Amino acid sequence: MARTFEQNKKYCQQFRDKYRKEQPLRYLTSLAKRRAKSRGIEFDIKHTDLTCPETCPLLGIKLDQWSADIDVHGSLDRIDSSKGYGICRHLYKTGHSKRHY
Image (cartoon, rainbow, N blue to C red; front, side):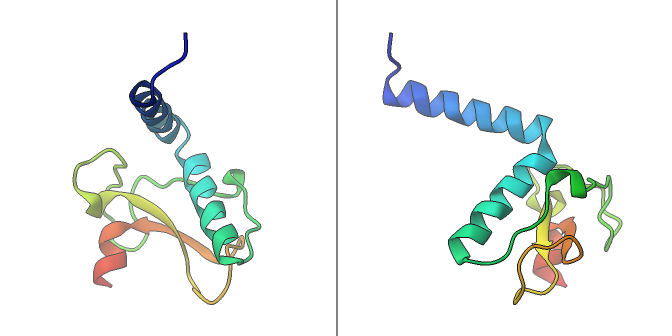
């Protein structure tokens, strides 16, 4: 039996949330790769090139992807925005540091 649009939407959301929770680095790299492709910039990293720290390397804040407070969510960022995502040009940090520093 085929799923309705609403059933499929809910299924996709649950699948995405499970994937994000179980494979956070794969999830972040897949989003970054999609952004890089849409912007036509370089992307040459794999999820295995990254580590997921428990605390922000800049602020020392404990990272929690599932918190309601977006300031403690980690992210994969380019250090130099004029360049693409390369092994030595990314930084994993909190949303708080992106907005306030």
